[in-house]
Amino acid sequence: MSQRQGGATESLTSWPIPTLRLAGLAGATAVLFLVLPDQGSTGILGIEVDNRFLTINAVVLLLATVDYLLAPNPGTLTVSRLHPGAVAMGRESNVEWVVARPKRRTTLWSAGVWLADDLAPSLRADTRRVKIKVAAGGSTSARVRIRPTRRGRFTPSEMTLRCSGPAGLVVKQRRRAVRSTLRVLPQFRSAREAELALHRARLLEVGLRSARCRGGGTDFDSLRELTPDDETRRVDWAATARSNRPIVRTYQAEQNQTLLVLLDAGRVMAAQVDGAPRLEFGMDAAMLLAELATGLGDRMGLLVFDREVHTTLPPHARRSQRTAVSEAVFDLEPALDESDYRSMVTHVATRYRRRSLLVLVTELAEEVVEAFLMPSLPLLTRTHLLIVAAVRDPQVEAWAMGLDLGSERAGVATVDEGFRRAAAIAELESRRRVAARLRAKGAIVVDAIPAKFASALGEAYLEAKAIGRL
Image 1: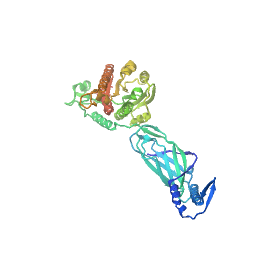
Image 2: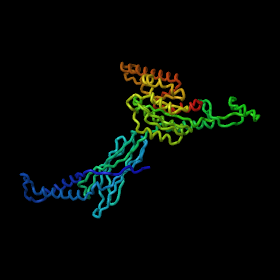
Image 3: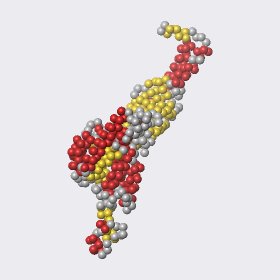
Image 4: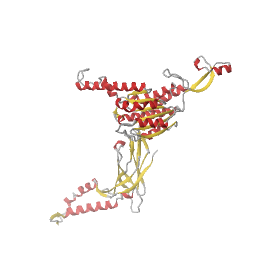
């Protein structure tokens, strides 16, 4: 819903600006120079000027002056900018300008008003300039469509107004301070995947279990009589002895568990993959996990760190947690320094003592993981179940498989392409080594391309939940 986002608070000096209509009038009246009788000349600064020329220009100047004086002062107009407080990146929304003009007894005509706003280019507005007519004592609005392509906080602060008189020969111009704030939230790219995964997980809860999922939860639900399809290990022997009938225990998927996403916002997450920083895909995955966890009755929280822990969203099971995650990271940008894993691990170990599912979204850079993450890992895996998730670059995979050879003969690579392929193979091998070492330390590793990253993380969470690892 649109809301008022600021009004004009100050104005600067007004400037008279001639219009094309004035130039057209001057050109049209020049024809009179040919039909008027000769009226002699007048010396001006030692130059003889034809009196007909002076007369014509005096008339044009008089008309322009009167038109300028009759034009409303832009400083007397009331200007406001209306737009939603927050817009999701890639979604369409509207920005509306409202211009109101005070009523004067001597004003009988509608004034032409040109308005130019300083909307950021990444908001992708259809136009930043409009022309409207505003009657005395009335107001007029104009609306423009925006489709933001970059998330963050935008604070348009100025508009430029031009007002013309009844003839439109000269306009008055002023800049007006109209401040407002528009927050562009990250795009939830995996909304469809989250919906499908949540639907499948709810089906599992009512007994429609797929072949991939083993077990049916570990939280006790109720007792009932044995049926031919029940497993004998579910038999409750004490209840069976009391009732003289075979009784089995039924279980439900665990609820009220805690999932905490640890989002690395350091240097390694600034690298571009598929045209976006790795951090963008990490935020999308965090929103998908928030949608899944809260939909299944679990609590989801978020912790963002680089040199220090600077964004913490406490775990909560409210259905609006995904929106809260989006609000928490909408203006987050990756730092260009190494992340302090030790500080993050200390923060988690001291504040989250109950066993939880920790999802560390970072990059599998061998030097960084070996030097900073590995020494601190036992503090997390001793109490919690840890998933280490990273976005794999599909372009590196293509290089490693030689799918982008640019030479004319298929299968023949140039020297540069050969070196590039060797480097890509070495990079993928390095990632495999890091993943193997993390698994040896007790962590689950998810290494997926951008298109499948969020859904792969959701699958890992659901599988850990289904087999009772939490």
